[in-house]
Image (cartoon, rainbow, N blue to C red; front, side):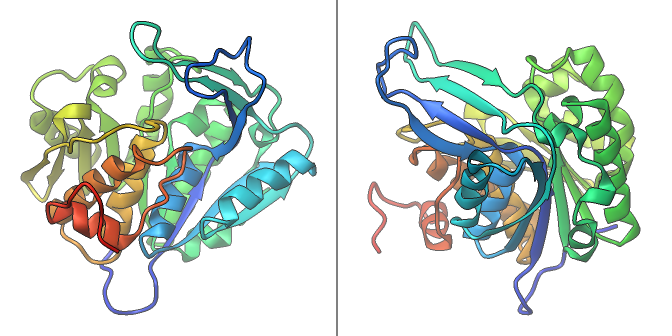
Length: 326
């Protein structure tokens, strides 16, 4: 397996699989318990990645499972309007939601999840558009999905294997969530999946907490690439930027200073920018720069999705200004 080649042909294709929820947020400075209004956004790691990739020139599809309900249609519409094709199985259950209360120091931001009995928890491969996975140039999912249920752990493994059997590049973000499982549980369930992964993305803090990896980020990326036979491993470091191991070499990209409007989805924007750049033929160092720029731009956009353009990303990479000249 190798990284996707990209080129001058038709738009490269990305398929993703995972849960998307409705996010409700009070205005900045308000508390959930006193708010009279809530803004509604659609968000989920895998659909966020699909949106970023679609915004940057890929043909993107998102696979999931939802009930037949107005809220489910709101989720689908929110994803479709950003250029992503939803391929959704219909079943019993509900739409997951989460409530985000933004707050600065010393209070901080609060997130409350309400996702029990979500329809996606029972999704199996025979319900899903697996043909879209097999036909894609790349397939992406994250460690959030197999954490939601045993069924989804099995489905995630099956989709990664189906992608590999079809010669599709497989990308995976460890994306550890402490509200879903412990580090030990995550390690035990996710490590076996890594043998089916070509591009692994992991936050430095998660590499330490879940994978018991300490030390310099480049060494961590290289050791994970060797151990799990990954084509590339990217270690993200927040304000310190990101590091990638590929072809025996280590590549680094610095984080960019931003005025943060909404930090939610920054990591997903990074992955979407990375995959879109790789899929359109960029080298790993150039893809790291594009990913970093996409993540920085996302922080200036309200909601979970990175509503950006290739011109935005190019301007930031080139040194940008406080206002991108359109």
